[in-house]
Image (tube, rainbow, N blue to C red; front, side):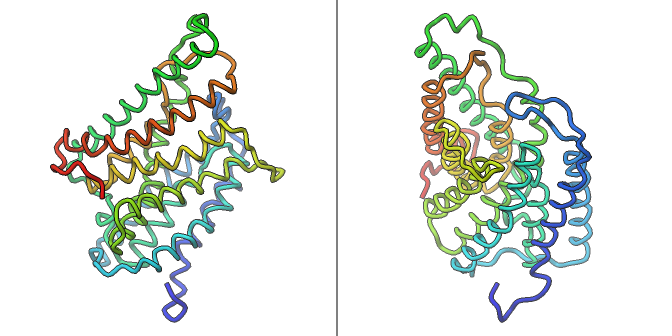
Length: 337
């Protein structure tokens, strides 16, 4: 998008994003229910708005599809233009996202992000969403792959969530062993339909695809988009007084670990050509991190070790993904290149 070719319609994605975020922030009516330890309050109106807006978006897309001829993504994608738009949209998202975290303790700007990127793809560029991984091809295989890698991830972390407290505090902590927090897992539909779809379409679907089409290698595209995905989570560290929360386990868990997480999602997309598997994995990861938990006051040492293990576990999953993809029937090549 250069100055010479600028049209007012180019501002539509940004305008729609800001307008929807402002609406959600201004009209929450302070209605909430008690939630989990991680998210003490779940605000009802932003969720209701998100459901309505998602339905409206689907209706709009069907209407546009019937009225406008959409094109496939061509091979001539400029790397510099993609990077420029990536930077612009990250800047656009940052402030509303920050206010969402401060206001609700959760990021309800997900559906507005979906409006932003879908508007960019369909109305501004006139492209088909299927070109960016939103399709039903090999749906069952993708669902299976997403569930399989999530199961492996959660199972490994369950072992360490029990083992590390035992090593640090002794076997006596096993008397406090319990099942995962049900109230947190209840967020799965939201994490799947709002968080998963919006973030996967934005980072992996649109920008990763554009970078690959520009000629960048898998690792170049994956590392760059995953690094920006990590920066995308920095607002969680910024307090309302503009101080920075640098508690190391929290920093690693909230921000650093999103880098290898992004790499896993890129690998899933690369090997399947669909966002379905990464959306499913994303949904599970955000709502269920362990099957069993030791219910004791968290100790710095345990938290730090578990957060570091999570980082390396996600890296392990990056290289395991091609083999799992082959296992469920996606191609013969086990390499990422």
